[in-house]
Image 1 (cartoon, rainbow, N blue to C red):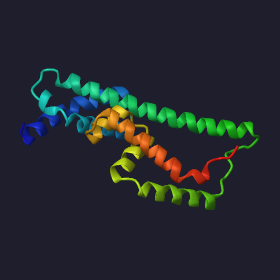
Image 2 (image 1 turned 180 degrees about the horizontal axis):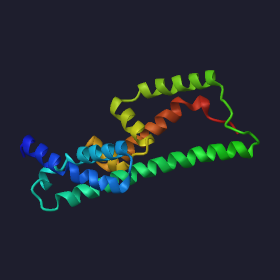
Image 3 (image 1 turned 120 degrees about the vertical axis):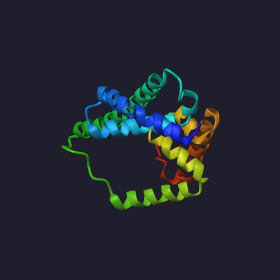
Length: 171
């Protein structure tokens, strides 16, 4: 497939994608982000669908999945933040207590040092996993089998546990 044909096909469907994205959210920035992410993800298999009569339906499914994944990530973050606030209120505090920033700096430095010992691809894979990406999404992004992704994340976890064992809570 010629690059020019792909660009034309995607530009032709951009307006349709914006209208579909408007059904998911009303925020113009989120709409643009959703359309862009859909186009980026569709580029991988666009040559199979470029002249297919159900191209827009395929793009809709991609957009819907992107939106659902983003929504889930936001929900997880919100639940965590709410839990933190709730637990502080249960302890009698009006807001979360401030932590010892010097100690946090040492911990952060140790984590970064341990991460720097990892192969670059494993570190990037692990960070994306922490951001909330699913194994399947990571396998697609890194062009590797899902089992390899799981194994690398597991090995990275074990490595970091070993490197950061000094911070393990006793008792």
